[in-house]
Image (cartoon, rainbow, N blue to C red):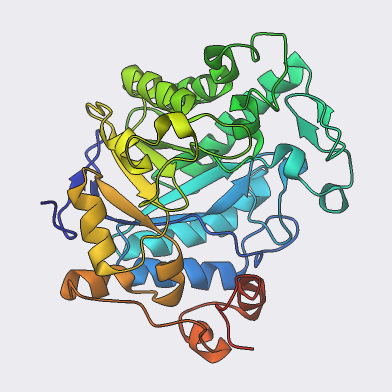
Length: 358
């Protein structure tokens, strides 16, 4: 059995002090130009203080046109470096690894936020998104890589490429959304080429001592479980990726696709040969017993969202009490404020059913 307070050593030699990573949680509490706010700083550094082995900041857009939410943290311009440096310095003071998640919303960028037509691998009638030219796809790759360099300059010890949840890289992976006829469309290999190009670029520009993760989701938005597993195997084979972060929504469920219901969704991934690549998963991991079940199933470390919102020190609570269960929801606004959430973040959490007391 893997103990929750066991250390994990990455290829760079950097050690993660336990098996808890803070999920990259959208919270809409930074400035509209992408500059870090005091509220965002407080929320994240309180999680580092609370014992997370990795503190991952929320999805940070690599192009201005890739903004997905109001108040989203940015990493598309050097003006963001000052705030991010302040953030990473404080995270690292608590012996937590600082990692940035690099993001682009693609066709999910609201027009009223970006003030222009959103972009997509192929034209999308429902969102009004236009198709990227091949030249623009290459530029997108370059901007993900440039954002990783910016992250390193800001003191981050690594990045995660957001290829999940129907955002732009996930849009490339979907045969329903991606109908391109150039080198970035067609077969699964071609549709996933953009991710491998970014991985290659990050490794080349940021070196071997920089942690590199990739987040993927195996369902929704036209994604197919079998194809995502193939991409995982190909990423592992490159030996360039330190960890794969698989977002399952529910780590204990069966797959949606009938042909794969012979085993649980999680087991489809733990059965893969990860070699020297670490595996983390996210989705419905709420209690200490949930954490134990996931680690015992062959996962290397857990990615925690909801319980990390409810308890800034969730890792410490689980390590000290194998029976720990989070506070029952709904919770008061005052309680969430005590856990480091700003009024803006609390308002955002009111979208979650029965999470915040009315």
